[in-house]
Length: 139
Image (cartoon, rainbow, N blue to C red; front, side, top):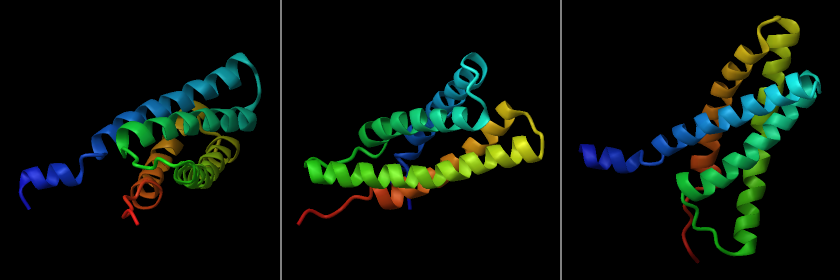
């Protein structure tokens, strides 16, 4: 396989990484605002930050990363449903990580948020690439 073929095979990785970093920032900043400015507490802040990050991720992944070709309402609805269900699953990983790292291991909440997001980004890429935005043959 030559370099051009390799680049074509992984053409979605760089935008995914870029928007993954942006999604992480949305998550961490959302968490910080909720936890430190609004004083919502650990878990409510984590859940609100997660929701904001998932909404941001769906829009960017659909449009700029995987360039979804879903056009009908049912196709977009199916895609969005899969996206949010997969993100809910990895959201549980995020929430569980925050609980474990902060409440049990007493690590820094902001440090823990970054570590949890690295794990979540990897899991989300796998789900997005091979399940949610998988190119399907037109019938």
